[in-house]
Image (cartoon, rainbow, N blue to C red; front, side):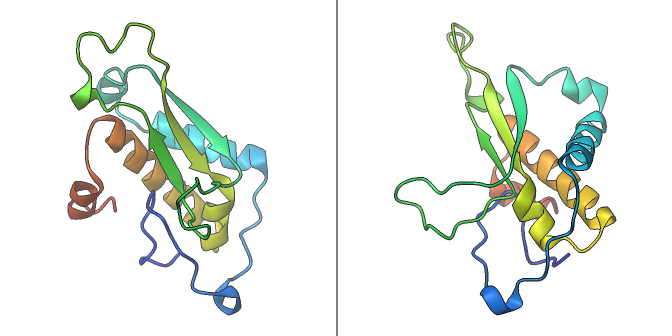
Length: 143
């Protein structure tokens, strides 16, 4: 798996000539990889996660105004714990972490690559739930 592709950040493909075949993995095996990554979260940290749901979707659809070629491996949508105030809980919908299956499979050459990329992407997006920025994640090696 190319080290130059940071998890959770927009990726603009280089071109069709450089695209390898995606690693073939069933939806259920991919779901198991995401579940395993979530199970690796230390219990004391998992207990502090508040009102967040994790989803798996096949692919990210760029929003209006975004580059139509944007590719994401994962996305955190919500209000980080560090920005919530005492009124936040009153009727707030859960934060949402989405892991995108196809882009991960597209950059991986083996089952081990998929498991590693899923784990890094899950950790990256959970870190956003805790208010950790992309810049800090890069400094920590979780780019």
